[in-house]
Length: 167
Image (cartoon, rainbow, N blue to C red; front, side):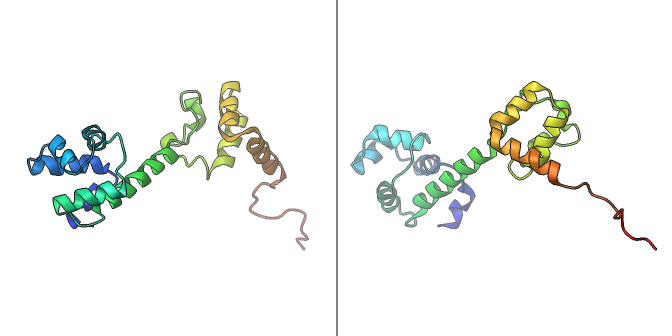
């Protein structure tokens, strides 16, 4: 991929294409028709509402003299970015959880999957019924039950061992 397009990773390739067409003073409709594509389809792509197929990307790249695969790679990076955004949004409903539960932590930086035991234990130790119900909805009753059981079987941390022979 050309170095000039590196900065566009994660941006919809249609947006980049629209910018490239404007930079070259090329009108969308005539360009779409020259590629034997429907102008409506082309418009949806340049607005970021539709993905770009490999076949169309190759046509556009040939016509504009872009390096082969540039738009396809941009589409792949865009798809990756969308998946990452979905994963980040995989959090409980923060409007329901009491702010006081996480007074010592920036709630936006909690890794809800990795730190699930600590979250569950804190909510069930200090939370109200709404907090508990939201955590059960988010993690599922089985995972909550498992975390609660694990906390009961773990021994507390101690600095020294008791009941040892100290002669």
